[in-house]
Length: 121
Image (cartoon, rainbow, N blue to C red; front, side):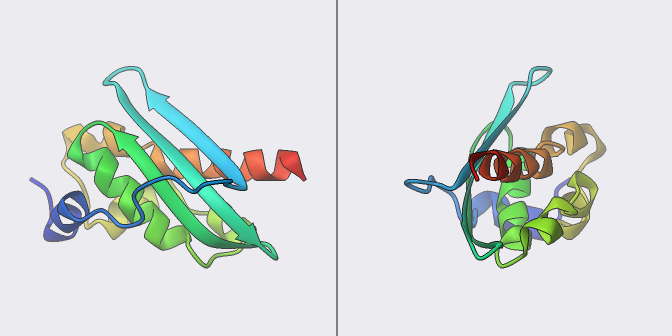
């Protein structure tokens, strides 16, 4: 069963969509269940000024993408790299055990977006 926090992020996802001319883009897919997430970031003076996501999959991946963007926005790149999939799940008040695999891609996609940004510098 989803928590009220998770249900809120599923029904009203924060920061959904693409960033045109993003400074970094990270993609992750979970071949076991077909969930996919793409993270877009804008960076100014080492700060994540905007973080958005597009997700394809179950409610858990949407909730995780939404919560992760809330957690990452305004953080330095180093701070954002410390965000873990476990921390995202905990911020959502936990997720059903069978859905943890679905949600365990949002932070990884963020880290990939930051790596993409750093590789372009």
